[in-house]
Image (tube, rainbow over all chains, first blue to last red; front, side):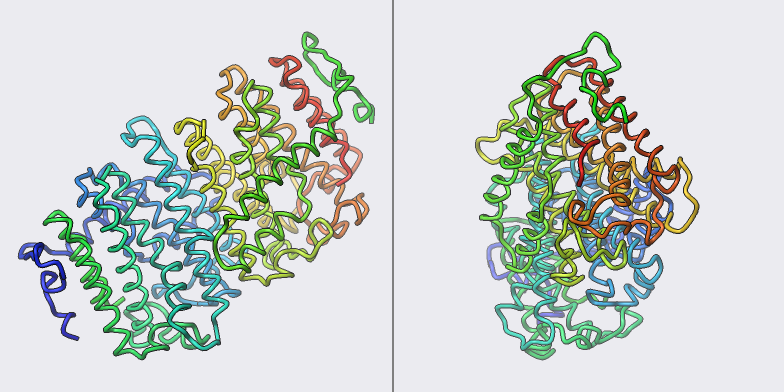
Length: 318
Length: 318
């Protein structure tokens, strides 16, 4: 448990970039950026068309308490690469639309059959299965509509936006998140092995988190030497995020996690705690965060936020 | 029934553009273009990653006998606007991915609960509901990945591709197809009215068909004066397509339609035949096709294929 209380500098394997962040208040940063993303969504819903029940169901899950971690990672990555974070808010927000769609579909009776998500009834428990499936479909589609938006005032160049769409589609579809979810389902009730576990988590969770970090890089026109660093950072925190999620699922208190504790155990999901136990899983998550921070050695203080976020993800309680 | 046997020239309200198509063999054209689209899909599946069961489920529905009408409309529209049809095949093919995803989700137990589609067991009857939902999700996501592809050799400019992505996302999501499907579900077992019926069909079916026609226009760099003509053509044939589909659902023979005859009646779907009866619905479809052909008055013979396709859609048996 040593690393949990460590300062990010101690986590950084690259001695040359050891640093101190005496003034950084990561919770304040996360709250501020969450507000920015939420403001975009409020504006977005004002103009949204379609049947009221569909818009309501989309808003229900989108405003159900998500931390906006993926958009915030894109924004922090954009800042680290010297870009203007305000410019990328609409594009970064699409990551939350995709994340939300994936949760809605994952919760369905034919998938994880969850009744609660973030302490509230799941989308299909409120709107029924049919509307819920379509709500996910709409959120996914909207993500790409927003990503392709070059309305007057947009400062992004078209080639970068196409690259961003490719990146996000690649991370979300049959090469990424959907592949992980399929493998997750196929692996229920069979003995866990590390290779399958890595495949599931790298695709189901880490792919979109890595894409979030890379989105900030692409839309800020970051230097090529940052690409590999951010990819490694994204993969490591993505995997760490899932491992801590699985630990929380077993250890967490219902009021903190907002879903029934031990629900993954119930259907015998393949998880790190199931394969290694909680203590070893915790060590793995710490190592992954350490590796994530170490991979940012090519950056100076401009990536401090990304370093702090990695620490925060490890120590979160929900 | 007069219009059914008519030559397209007789359907065209614009006297100046009356035409004859003595050599046009529309079935040959449709078969040839279907081959072109299928060849693209075969190449595409060679490179596809992800769990084998997911790729198999995607291919199962994609090669289940679809006519590739939407990609072909995009190609024919591109030809009408003077574009190079070969260049747009990958982009046009994404319309079939989206159409196929929508069929897979529509057939689900919580939606139309269909056991047969084009004479074969529906996707969820073969792969189960969870994989089937994810297969639809993957097909939708892949459509945008392909649309954003600017691999070496791509002659499309980035701004046009972004415009195409916006067009297709708008036609598929909560402004288009998904909105229509939601309204379709909400309208089951309630009395039919024309306004609701038009909303359902314009969104659920016509939106993507209109987008198909517009895709060819956008990617061929068509003149602005063609835009309104093709929009009107697309809306009219889109609506006509759905009306004839609903007629076939009641009148068709199982072996031609490939799904259980009268399945819409079973769950009391809101359809034109239910509101107007078969004879009046047939007249409405004929008028829509007549209007579609009339709207192409701004084109000369270069739009003959689009005119023939409109006729073909009216007279099809499946």
